[in-house]
Figure 1 (cartoon, rainbow, N blue to C red):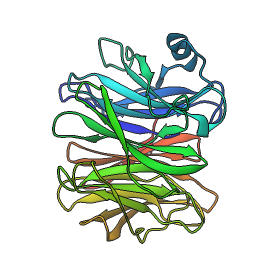
Figure 2 (cartoon, rainbow, N blue to C red):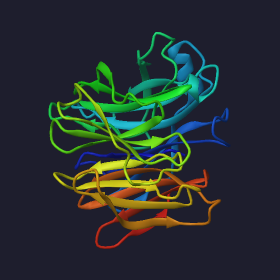
Figure 3 (cartoon, one colour):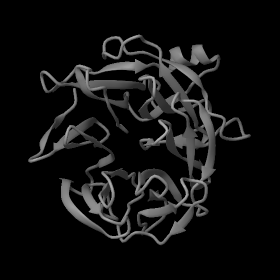
Figure 4 (spheres, helix red, strand yellow):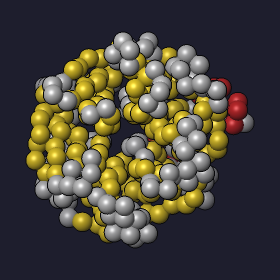
Length: 322
């Protein structure tokens, strides 16, 4: 469940790496963070392997972890891969913390890739609990990035975390004053104008949106988009001025339809194509987007049992990750 995509350096044998969490069930005791790489030469995915084990990481941290989930990947200015993972001790997801891990292996081939914890991010006076990560970071012109997270203890609201080009945490700011938005996805319309597109945790929900015009110093809530949201994650991507993409579940009744929509201004959206259409009981959820080598790459969860992928260019190539 909950895949994340990372572009690899141009000289690397793999074009991209995808991470997700996997086990018998969500919150299961055997859940670990898995990964696979798409090789340029063969145009095939490598066999998946686990790269983060909660027992090993717990020993390194000095305290136990009950569950792992929602990995988000980023590559810093020195070319090191960072993972930000939802991790809990006691309690459920609402008691989660954001765990920051950094590549500890010398190489980035999948068979040697390894991570070590940096720390639990200091986001709350309450033992840093009830903060969760889900969507991809947004790159900044200085080589740093902004990582979208949300608070989830009773109320839900989004926050933006800022990191420098080496991956050092610089601070945080709240993106909305409303209390039912979670799992924000960030897109830049210019170096200083950004949008946060969000999942709605309420009946008859719409995709939520907040805006900053000063590079994240101040945020304001905008009216909901005219896009239904069944309390489901969205993924957003900016391809330049006036070119925004959004992967989202478009039915209020279920997660059985996954659409790709486009917008020029972030306010008016039109469906580009339906990526998946199933029965109401089906689930195509938690999409991730990446633009690489002139193609749009999409990954998403299918029925909480596998990660599917799609590459859209002149025509889609689809399949399932191993």
